[in-house]
Image (cartoon, rainbow, N blue to C red):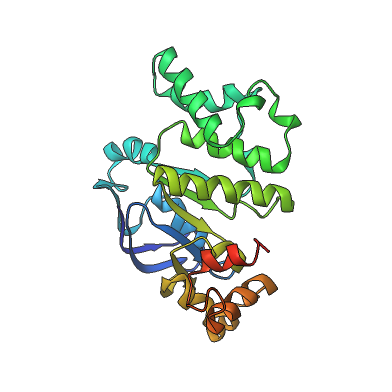
Length: 270
């Protein structure tokens, strides 16, 4: 479980970026975080693995306190963070060396490192690319590599800060599929920061920020139905999401109301 209690934060010389945010994220949740640029999304997420330390308030991950220097190393192993630009996280000259970097720094034995690397690459479907140079990978493959490098640390919680922004459609689909599979099969908590409403469809919950405060925290369907809130946050509802919502309202799936996942399947993944 991740707990945020009255979290406030301001960068030097700037106005308050986070203003007394309180949230609880249950283990196994798939939470979408949305808001305008400057709303505090990335700043909040960086507090969840102690990349940033609270100036006021508390962040707890499974009881580990981000403000306690003695807790931070263990906390960061439990919470993996994937950035918008995967190249910012790539340090190895070949794929498998990049994935091994984190476990090696934990001082693990060579067989344990090898097992973690193999398992992480298999999870993101990159086993056959383990000997490649990261510079030869596509954008989607680089982002999957960044995820694998985080997974090798065996995190319980995975944070992704606008991970699809720099990717082409194929790369976006690859990353969405991999993260969805991790959530379903490994029960990893996912916190997904985005500007794109279609990326919220796999989420069971949405948190919306405005000027450093939470203005919505609830079910994904309720958020996607709220046209006034979309306008307030300057979010565009793409045709696919409109189609899903209209089908749900019209009860056109087997004559019964259906969840968003079922509707997407009925639409053929459009």
